[in-house]
Image (cartoon, rainbow, N blue to C red; front, side, top):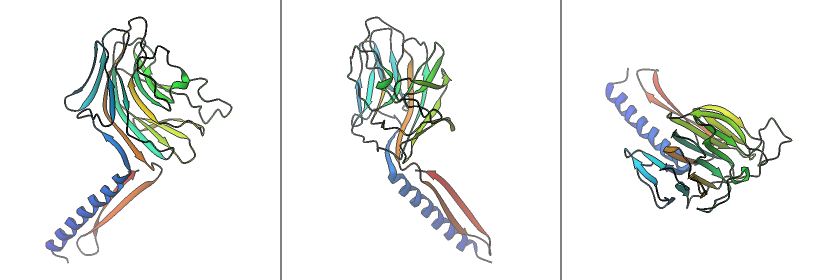
Length: 256
């Protein structure tokens, strides 16, 4: 029978190994922003008159616009998203009132702040945007896998909707075949057919300057993460010596 000292040493070595292995996994991390502050290295922030962009509770990004012709417009910079095999996840919550809109957009375009041209399907790839007075729609400009004859960007598909005042997690997985899988709160909601459209820009709010005043939602973003090589599922197993032939096994599953 092994002594308690031997067991303790084994536990300590196992824990050190466990966290060292986890650190190596995180080397695939491209961006990890928990919005405890606004990092000017990674974000360009445009705030119109009557708009607000701030950090609340040292925890999440808050975007708000009073009734007016323009919305705050915040976009990512100095971050290169791989052409494929990556994962993006964002945790968000919208609050009313809703009318024309502002939202969260994943695109291959970066629109000019103050543009007077209304947004079109071809301006976004995936978007989280008001779809009614009480719900937020999650939409795709890339066709679903189930409709191979569909042409990308010709028709934006509202995949599903979420309610106001509720935190949700949205994930985008890009595989090596240039297809996307979308998840909402851990459940798969959409698979695209392979597409030449590549996400290169992420932005919040709305760059458009309208002629008439309109109501827009409040947008709260808890975090935004980008990882490369999302298609590799890594399982680490650490065996910690115990009593006799028994052992304690720690397992960690990480999608990176």
